[in-house]
Amino acid sequence: MILQIHSEDLEQQAAIWAERQTDGLSANDQTLLRQWLEADARHRQAFARARTDSQRVTQMAQALAREPGLQSLPVRATVALDQPRQSKPWLAPLFATAAALLLAVFVMLPEYRTGTGEIRTIQLEDGSELVMNAGTGLDVEYTDAARRIILHSGEVFVRVAHNPDRPFTVHTEYGDARAVGTAYAVKTTGDQHQVVVEEGVVAVQAKTSPALLQITANQSVQMGQKLSPVTERSAEEVSQVLAWREHRLYFSNVALAEFVNEMNRFSHHKMYIADGSLSAVRVGGAFNAGDTGSALAMLKAGFGVEVVQITPWFSLLYPASEQASQ
Image (cartoon, rainbow, N blue to C red; front, side):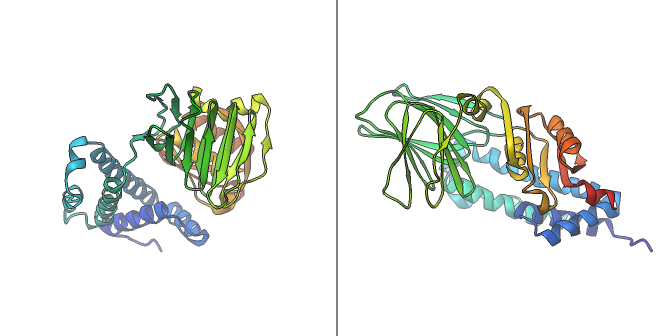
């Protein structure tokens, strides 16, 4: 028997699934979502519409947040969004999400930020240079005695103007990377932040320890609850790690979850891992930043991944064997 679903109920189900996926799905929920999507083409269409509505509301909130005039308004005024029409009550959670996002944005908005696919170069007053990767947010704090970059998210490459009287530090949630005159990158990734040195010497200090660890050119270290051992790299490896500055991305035996996160930085066609068992699959390859089509083709051809494209800008990733058994 085919279950007949009222269109408004279907839209509401799709909106709920879209919100739950944004928040993170359990393995069981991932299976249920896949089954729901495969059950009926109308489900896939409704889900695509719900994802689009969610993205538009989020983009609207982010666009409002970039308006300079709004930042001087009281917070209660900035989050006073119109209520959704009664004809689409399932939009209510999306507007609530937008309101919460606006509240968070206006409480703490980074001074410098980049969007999807955007790489930005900033010349600082002392002659130092910042190159911000896509999806990055940071603040600059300069005093007569010190220069401090607060990296909230994403990745930044810094080329530091020499001045031993004003130490230059990149600060993250898990610690600091300090240099006097050098070139290095700091990247935030979940509970591990990475420091990679291209030139010179960097003193790295974990937030939980007073000890300083010095690393030099072609070395890297991870900052978490403690510092990892130093990793020796070749000059070519460092060049590949930092190739995002030229809109090139290199991956060598990385987890699929990391691969997806990095590719999604540069493309409006987002990939989502629909089955958690894929997250740790190791992948590799070289791509132009934003070339999601080549990335999806590579995953299908060489890494046992089935791609279900829901819309031109949204694809789900499943184990190929699981799809074949359906």
